[in-house]
Amino acid sequence: MKTMTVGEVYRAIGGRLLQGDENMTVSRVCTDTRQIAPGDLFFALRGENFDAHDFVDQAIAGGAGALVVSRDVDVQPRVPLIRVGDTLAGLQALAAYHRRQFAVPVVGITGSSGKTTIKDMVASVLQTRWSVLKTRGNFNNEIGLPLTLLEFSPDHGAAVVEMAMRGPGEINALCQIARPTCAVITNIGTAHLERLGSLENIARAKGELLEHISADGFALLPGDSHLAREQARRCHGQVLFFGLEPGMDIYAREVRREGSGNRFTAVMGDTLHEIYLPLPGKHNVQNALAAFGVGIMLGLTPEQAAAGLSLVTLSGMRLDIVDATINGKTITIVNDVYNANPDSACAALQSLEEIAAGTRRSVAVLGDMLELGSGAVEGHRRVGAAAVRHHVAQLVTVGKLSLETAHGAQMEGGVPDGIMCCQNKDEALDMLWDVLKPGDVVLVKGSRSMRMEEIIKGLLKD
Image (cartoon, helix red, strand yellow):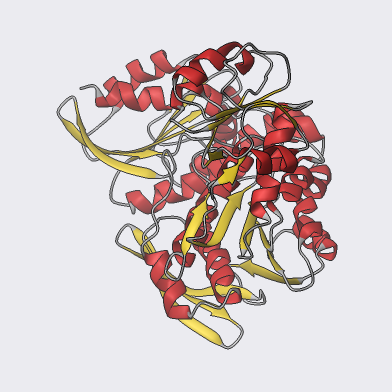
């Protein structure tokens, strides 16, 4: 964050300075007293289960240079104290104000799955030309996005921000803060179906991003999604469709496995360029096409975009491939546990098949996928059927909902080495110790709240 005076802060957020010197400066925002640093501007946020006003003493002890509060607190007179009606709204207002100080491309990314992957890819592409601000971890919501934007500095030549949503209006609110100049919608799938009720409602909620793209901006949408195509009219700028098949504005040809990744030719109008992507899965080729398109539209050369994709590394717990020796057996673990919905689970199973490459036994450990509402049974069965189609040798399900994953696999004809249904992670771990064989490739995936990473940790304790 560029340095601001306390006076600039309270005027930007519509607050009142109750005490302290408005000429004092702050250069970083913090909302967690455990991470406070001397001179920080501390926002006392409130949540369902916490109220940071109770910890202002710790913030001051940690060296906070100023405080933003929404109720009375007792602090030393020397500490600047800004009062607002709502500290979260104040944080968002400051982030919006700070964002307006930078006339650089801001890429907004949303979708049902693949947001973080495409964010990482786009950032890697743009980093061949600029210093890039990008969303860290899961900082993609009403708190995380403002904190991301407050890290903007004059050194940054572009920003790539991920936008999550759980209901209508949330993407719109994030866009009012971030002011994206271009957009990517990764896909429209069943994530959050329980909350929004239909795929059409999900598409409309994701499509809010497009309404914030001006005439001189652009949006990239998945061309194989009729729901995404229906949202295209909401964009005021240029719309390009990406996908694996010819007929898209950006497509791939000559896709082939190479090592642990894929090599393909990206086609965008008259531009053809060969790309090596160090990631498995055709879905990642499609993701890379979107990132390639963003780079070209922002003025990068095909060589720069391809170089960025060749260097991409994904955020943690997303197709992390680890070789390990477990109980004397050397196996490969594919850690894709960050989250799951039917689309991302099917894509992960395709990646598992590619990694096993027909020469190694593949094992899929699949946990419950949540927030699917009325689509839960069909969604889990679809994943089970995909496990069979992608030649999984052994299927392990974890949780009550995942019994339907097992059912889906059985309806598709089953898997060669059988299906084991476990009530919980501990039971699954015990079974895996017994059934894993040397050379196995083991995919572990499930919804975030299932904490499937504990299975991996248990295996790696050996």
